[in-house]
Length: 557
Ligand code: TEU
Ligand code: CA
Image (cartoon, rainbow, N blue to C red):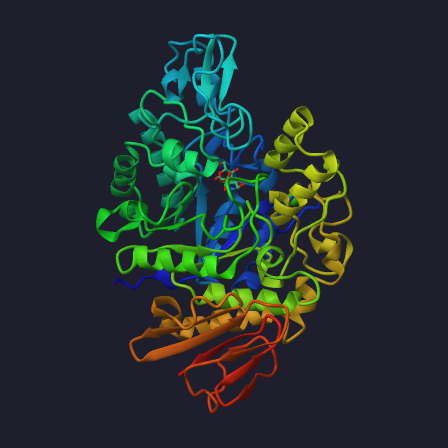
């Protein structure tokens, strides 16, 4: 196995809109990130991933790009970006950008031109189809954000494809000109010194020939079998890697939507020279049965262990994955998998022990390092996310759920949970912005108790626990590269495992229950001090550990 900087490095995802506002307009920006570079460095993270910072009408907060080589004015200028990149590098960190290559904005010049007429030179940059025989959309494809994936265009009497909102038309990768445009945009940023890309919905870029109807199974399966993994996706990725990424000291991190452990190797096996790594959706969606705002299943630890295991086995020695427990598309990690009330701090730390000791590149989402929690929005007027709003409005028509229940579902699962501003201190708006203007999205009212300032001063805070763990992780390759051995796989309350790499071994014991539990370990650890422990004490009699609620410990033996 090849050891490399992007395997051992920790990725920290920044959602710039919600990170830090430097000029008081209520929107996070690039200078706001520059202001916090010392903070980021103090975390011991290595690679900053910025969610899209390019020109965009913000129908989907920057995931609808109208110019791939320009900075969104709300976020700042190219000069600000150059300064951010330089200062990031000066601190020994790397910077990757979010490449949204599957679709652009309907306000991109390409689409504005394409709409003009059927023979416009840009027409073939997109997917256009005639109506079906009844005049409706060409097939039954649904958008990820509700409704048909096709939008009718009056001028030409044809439909265009948009797997996301209608302001996000899908680009036609069959057209070599589209691919070259995208490669040029990538080169533009790589030439500036950017260290790689997170590739948004990259498995969707090749569409199935003839756009066949989707069978009537759940949406997750539709994604896997109809939208993602199209016939030419590997050809395109090989081309992109050969012509662009491999020409630089850069790496690619794919959003593995629609990729499962069985076909993952096709994307990430070393010898295929496609992508350097991907993060899959199996952990992120482990409580989501078919798609957001559908059926949910309760959290099940053995199921989660199984997901980690099947991915470990699948990528063993040949490929590499990134390991995310949350991001800007999901509710907060501590609220989902831990507990955000009585045992909030213990559970946040315990979950991080689990995440940081799994195989793969560690991928942290902003705010998780202080245990930020879900927010309870009080009315639909406070909801900002297009996915949640579409769901709510659709539901007003179908009346499937009451309005109260729909809002409750948004509060449980919606993406705004992860998008509330970072809580820097206990001043107004959590220190995210000045009082001149309200932030673009509500600040979680718990900023009084959960904030960076307070945790910075507290040696046993979640924040300082993250710092310690990340620092320790850097010193021991076993955290990253170790072979994994489960201790009691079928235990539904405790996750225990051993990792070994060369001469180093660690044992990890995690209590996933909110009560005290005994756990008998098959090793004599009575003389061994834990390397890390999320409580001040660990009670042990012979080989029986008496674990406190959500207690997590790491031993090095
Ligand atoms: O996400 C793709 C994706 O699959 C998500 O839409 C996901 O299914 C959903 O949010 C979970 O309910 C990427 C970006 O991460 C997301 O923010 C964008 O909205 C989307 O692509 C379109 O660019
Ligand atoms: Ca601002």
